Length: 215
Image 1 (cartoon, rainbow, N blue to C red):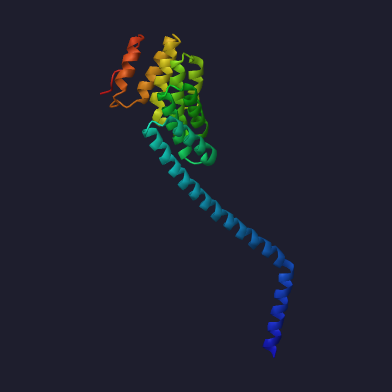
Image 2: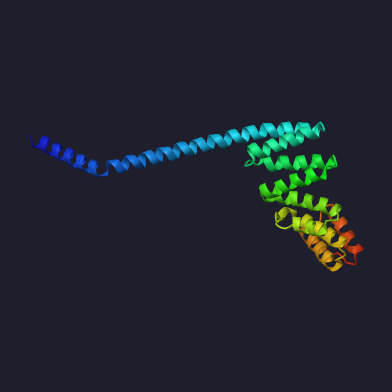
C-alpha cells in the first residue's frame, strides 16, 4: 500500500509539472518539427532546382554548339529568371555572352557579362569583368573598361586582370601606369605560362623591361 501511495505522489508531481511546463514543451517540440520540416523541404527544393538548372544548361550548350543564338539567349533568360541562385546561372550568362559576341550583338553580350559579374561567385565575376572590359576597350570606352575591372579579385586571374588594365592604360596613353600594370601582371603570371611572353613584349613596346628571372 505504501508503494501505491508513493506512485500516486509521483503521478501528482508529474501532473503538476506538466500543467506548469507542458504547454511550453509542446510549442518547443512543434517549433523543432517545423524547423526540421523546413530544412528538409529546402534541401529538396535546392536539389530539384540544381537538377532542373543542369538540364537547362545542357540545352543551352547544345544550342550554342548549333549556333542557335536565339535559343541560347532564351535559355539564358530562363536560367536567370528561374534558377538565378544556382551556379549554372552565371555559367549560362558567360556562354550567352560569347554567343552574342560572336554574332556581333555587343549590347546583349555586355548585358550578359554584367549579369554574371553581379550574380556569380568570385571566379565567375572576375571572368565576366575581364571579358566586359575587353569589349569596352574595343569600343574605346576606356574609363568604363577600367571601372569594369573593379572588384575582379579572384587570385588565379590576377595576372590577366593586371594585363587587361595595362592594355587599357596604353590606350589612354598613360604609359607609366601601364608599365606598372604589366609588371604586376608578370609578377602574378607563372613563368611557364605561354602568355607571359606577350606581356613582356607589350611592356618592352612602351619602354619597360621585364625583371630578370631569379636563378
